[in-house]
Image (tube, rainbow, N blue to C red; front, side, top):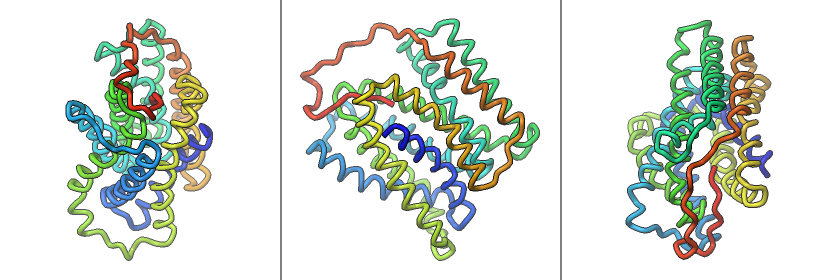
Length: 303
């Protein structure tokens, strides 16, 4: 299940690049995609949990999570894929674990060792090499490269933001709320593009790509990921998920025939080395899970 999840996530970068060059405008595509996913995932969540309710006191944090994990993340991701290559975006997404730990440290959730700071330097050096290799230096691709970094950072911030919510809700309930709230903000931002989108210009493969992007990377992978993480634990699951940037790069190279430079290869290796070096982290004393507050059907698992 973890491997299928990683394959679907990695392939989605290539699919996104394809649909953006074959008729879809970035925000129009993202708004339609998340609207469909929100409806489907709410149905899945209600079938599994028998409730979609959340507590009023948790609404501010849930809205922050939606703003980070859907709205800002999608704005960054869609324009990163539009402005630079899918290969570059895939490689840069490998920095998500590093950003997650750095944000957790900034908020006092984790204490990081000297080894981790070295790992961070290696990974961000890798990002610099990927960016330099994508356009021979500071070229027109630099905006896309920076947005790819923003995509990693916003997803990492989202991952840290939902951690306290995992004590009271299942991952399915959190995802359902975040998808709906994030889609509302995304649809509002995309209003102009939705109005000007030429739906007739989208070919059959473009619509198939949209269908895949809704059912695969958003709906199916949520079910697979949280089911698998309950079986093998978050550490092993995260280790497998580290394959995603390399899988994404391979798909982009094989299907889109994108060019990859030696600097990008070296940068991808550096990001991977940084992730491996960062595996040892010492969390501060975490609060125990209060079972009375947990939704009965909840199974705690955090990406």
